[in-house]
Length: 421
Image 1 (cartoon, rainbow, N blue to C red):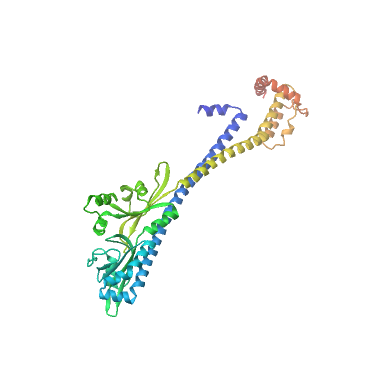
Image 2: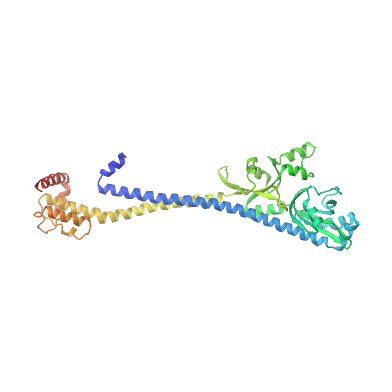
C-alpha cells in the first residue's frame, strides 16, 4: 500500500509509464497463463487419445485374428479326409497330416494350439501336445460346448489348459451326423509385438489369479520349487502376468494398486525418473463378454512434454518481447500526445507568471483538457495573455533553470488570485 501511495504522489511522467508497464505485464501474463492451462489440458487429452487408440487397435486385431482362426478351422473341418479320420478316431493319421502344417503356422503366426473335440466337449486330439485325451472341458470351455450344442462356429478370447488364446472353434459333421469340433488357437504374442513396434509402447496381459489357477493347469503353479517360484513371480495381487512385450519393463510400472482400479478403462500419468509416462488398464473380456483379466499399455510421452515445454518457453519469450514493444509504442504515443503538450503548457504558464507576454491560443484546437485549461487561464489572466506572441525557446530554457522558484511563484500567485476572486 505504501508503494501505491508513493506512486500516486509521483509525477505523471513517472507514474504513467509504470502503470502502463504493470497493465501490459498483467494482461500478457494472464494470456500466457491461460494458454498454458489450455495447452496442458490438450496435452493430457492427446495422451488419453493415444492410449485409447492403441487399445482399440489391439481389440480390432484380436477380433480379426479370431476370425482368421475360425476361417482356418472351417477350411480344414470341411476336408473329407479329415472328417473321415475324425469319424474313425484315427489320431495317428490326423497327427501325421497336420503336424507339419501346425509347426509352420506356429512359427509364422504364433499359432499355439490345434485340437479336436468329441461332442459335447471331450478332448479327442491335441496336435500341439500329446496326451490328455478324454478330458471333459465343459466346465470351463464354453466355446467348445456352444459350438457342439448350437452347431455353429465360436470365436474370440478364452482361457484353456495351456493359457489364454484367440480361438476359433467350428463344428464338424458328416452324412451320419454331428461328430464334434475342431479348434485353431493363436496367442496374443504377434499382436503385442506388432503394437510395441508401431507405437513404441510396452503391452502386458494379466489374468485373474483365481481363474488362471483353476483353468490353466498346464502352466500354473507346479509342485517343484523352481516352477513354483517362477509362477509366483508372475503374480501381482489378484492378477497373474501371462505374456507381455517386456516383462521387466511392465513390472516397473504395474503394481497391485494399479490393477485394482475399476473394470472400465483407467488411465494414469506417472512420472518415473523424471520422465512422463501414460498407462491404460483395460478390461480383458472373453468371447462371451465375461471379464477374465486386464490388458495394460505403458507408453512414454517424454517427447510430447519436451515439445510442450519448448512451446511454453517460446510463448514466454514472445510475451516479453511484446511487453517491450508495446510499452515502447505506448511511451512514444503518450509522450507525443500528452506529456509533451503538458510540458509546453507548463513552460508558458511559468513564463506568464514571471510577467512574460505569452499566447495560449495554439492549445485551443486540441479539443481535450488542454484547450479547457488554456481557456481557463485566459479568463483568469486576461491582461497577461493579451499579447499573442509565442514564448521563445530562450524563455523556455530560462524557465527550466528556475523551475523551483517558478513553482513557489505559481503557488503564491494562485493564492493571491483566489483572494482577488
